[in-house]
Every structure is written in C-alpha cells, then in structure tokens.
Length: 175
Image (cartoon, rainbow, N blue to C red; front, side, top):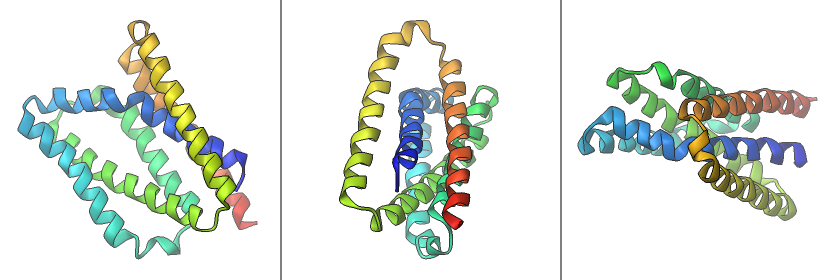
C-alpha cells in the first residue's frame, strides 16, 4: 500500500463527488416523476446489494485492483455517454450496472484494507475525505462558470486516468 494507491482512490472519490449531485439531478430529470426516480435510485441500491452478497463469494479469485479498474472504466464510459442518453430503458440498465460495479469497488476496498496497516487506512480516509471536501467546495464556488456537461466529461477523464493507474498497480503487484 502506498501513496500512489491513495492518490488513485482520491481521484476516484474526487470524480464521484464532482458529479454525484448532478447525476442525481440527471436521474430526476430523465425520470420525470418521483416514482420513476425512486425506481432508478432503488435499482442502483438493489443491484449493489445483490452483487455484494453473491459477488463477494467470487471476488477472492480476482485482484482488487482489477475489480476497481472495472468500476472506474464503467464510470468513465457512463459519464462520457450521459449527454447522448435519452431512452429511459438505457438509464434503467445503466443504474443496475452502476450499482453492480460500485459493489465490486466496495468489495475490492475491503480486500485491500484487510491486509492494510492502520497508518494506510487512516491516510486513505483522510486524503479521500479531504479531496472530496475540496471538490464539493470548489464545485459550489465555480458552479456558475462550469458547464454540467464539462463536469461529467472531466469526471469521465478522471475515472479513465484512474483505470490506467489501477492497471499499472495491478501489473506491478503481480511482479
């Protein structure tokens, strides 16, 4: 465990925090009614819980970096595609996949922390929370001058960069 991994996980936290409130607005706008919005948000939570429960049994067969890479790659593809998604059925599918890939990320986090020192875990919690707070404050300050599409594109690039970094970390951990 090292600073490079903490930096990568902070980038993922930054990207997530950057778009989360606007992604919820996207869901609300595409859902158009509260029952559809609730269904969309519920599909995410339901698929997350199912994958954590059943997928957790198989996660030991895979590298935690690989699982995190899948999550980051999916988030990158999702955020790059948001401007062109107009069909509610695609959003339903996206929510199920988003929940599933988020579950993989959470499982991978647990795997990493099982063998981590308390210094690593404390450092991880500090830096990811710190970067997330800076992101939320920064977006709030810059909101009037930032285009929402730009934020989704920027987050997509952050996730893509973290995917590459996690791939490097996975290759390095095998050697």
